[in-house]
Amino acid sequence: NNPFHVTSVIVTDGDGDIPVPAVLGHANSSIPAGEAGTVGEGDLAGIDVDGTGIGCYVTRTGSMLMTVIPHYFQFLIAALARKGLGKAGGGGRCCVLYFDGHASHLTPEGLKLLIDNYIFPICLPGHTSIWAQPNDAGGNASHKQVLADATAEWFANHRPLPGDSPADSKLRIEDFNGIYCSAWRQLLKRLSEDKLHNGTNAVLSGWRVTGLYPFNPNCVKWVAAVNGIGQRDALASGGAEGLPPLE
Image (cartoon, rainbow, N blue to C red; front, side, top):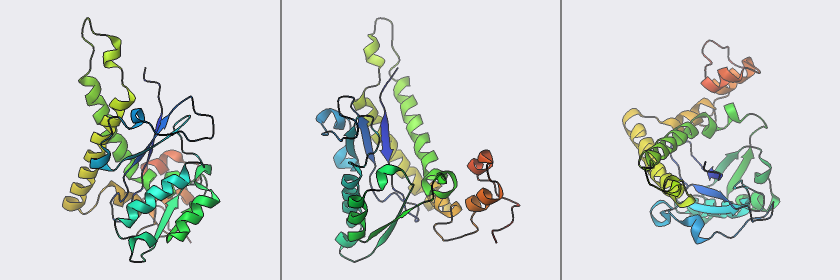
């Protein structure tokens, strides 16, 4: 009943934080395939840009494209610089950026832009995201949960009453943008509180079980992957107890 697609682009770090604001990819069927459109007021409606820093791009389907990724990397570089990271951060502190092998990420222009700014890209092996990518192994689940809760709350508050127009309960882009901003604040709050009170959070857990930070070749996810080839359910649950370490 709400036929629009939105992509959410999120970067996390090994300290259990989200150092870069999210970017939303909205769909516009009038844009030619493979091209990026101009972000209009309607795409930004409902986004508290000043309060959250959340960005936006527009493509035909809302998916990330090779034509968009260099612009996203510029957004990423600027956000990291504000934290004193990368060449633009002034301190010369480099970063390593892990990502999966989606074709949109692998553009010479975009990769050179990262390297020139002391952000060194590492592409994870293909078809390994379920156990190799920290976001898939940790933070994404929390992100989806807070977004689902905020969406459910919106629909609960917009149930049609007798005599109401169906349009009154239809989720529009500006409604979703507002829901997303609310969920984004809740996610950041949850991660911060969990880290403060428990010493860990979903993001930290994702980096730990994939062995990327702290570095651990015998981490939970990779041990489970190597010892349980093809057992997707076991990988998704993260269960590797009792499995021998890698040789």
